[in-house]
Image 1: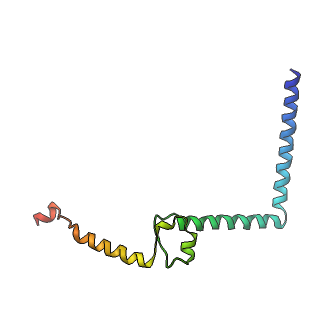
Image 2 (image 1 turned 60 degrees about the vertical axis):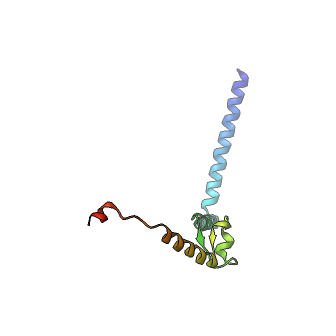
Length: 111
């Protein structure tokens, strides 16, 4: 029974210490230039993460050349389309488009 009471006192002391530390950190952040610095730091982090997500979210993206920042920041460089590859992809698309002729629908056949 006594061990249980002592454990409860320790938990209470730890909780009070946690509360006082939390209030101290909140007070420290909200006063002076520290709040502005933390706010700007947070904006910088989220802007950087948004930029990286925007570059890497599309399944494929066209970059002007291999030395560009677009190519540098891309994680999966196999999905980058460079200008010389774009011409080849368009030619392949045109070839496949001619090969597969679309049959007219029944509505068009009736007219």
